[in-house]
Image (tube, rainbow, N blue to C red; front, side, top):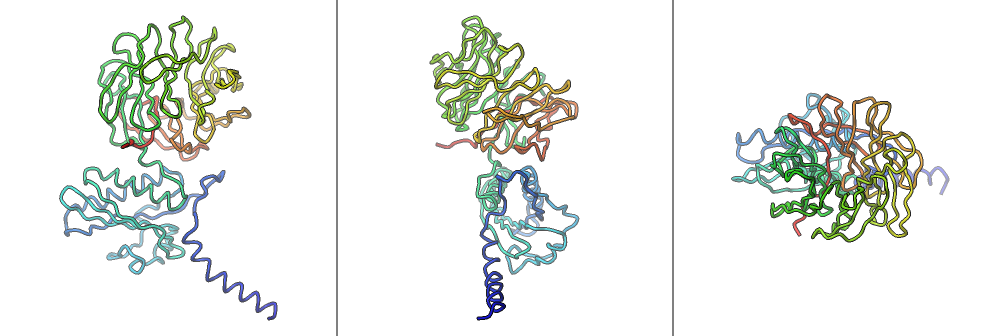
Length: 437
């Protein structure tokens, strides 16, 4: 066989296999340092049930899908005004005119339909690669009509899984402080700030919520009894109990990675130090012992190290304590006011630093090195906390006047406001979906 014939055979072979491989490959490398956003079209979901009933649901389902995928940072949703969708275009490969979607620049297409049965709704959704005209994912979901947002979050998770091979964040939840009532109370919401409900109604000051690693409990400090005491709320039973009510401070609690213990700052020995207690409130160990003030513990993913804030060097700085050998070392040296460390499961620490007269969010490697600044010239940005997967950060910012919650990717991109309450929202904690075990 001549050389040109061999080349021709190889080209024909490649042409045959590429479409198949493209349909099954991972589209988004979430570990890449910079990710180009996919242009995605999400038309209103089609009513597959009785004509004329629940027509508004089609717009709502599509709107939440757009919102989810936009917040993920992986997609650039196309404005519906640009759609060239044919009037009776269906949901299957043979019913879709991919050329029309390609003309408006869509790379991906989500097609969905729904059927309302009493108080429940069944949703069918399919994800397509517009260029190849291939279906990437197809799923059915059943839920209550009134709970349609959670149903769409499940769909969005499936889209992320199909394109990245990883779980999405859309069923995770936030706990945070809100003072809309005139008091500082703890609230719980979806990851995007929607469906917010109060966890406390103490008409006092509640601070520093922390969701447990399994998503079933929330720690917080409250002044409702006059002095700061640590409380534990069970999200399944709704019951709340005191976990630590020792004389002086009981503040800044953090869960160990396995959720079996809690670190917090106590002043029972006079000076504020960090102690480890069990879930019955018994002191297990004193983790710091220094003349400085030690607060804000956060554990490494393996639980063998702890980040914390101490003024032992003269100003608030982030320190790391090795819980195996007992050695402590200073981590931050840039700036004279560094606080609020949060250690991600991907082994990166995010924190707040005073920067040219305002607070900004930075990340740093736990071993040290050059910090990376994520916010700049947008008011005060504080209280950072990682998502359970370590790929996103939630924080509070007053860039628009009042403090509201925002999320961004781990590299500081795609900053989006997610709460719009009347008061200030601050001190967020990001936890997993509620465990049913």
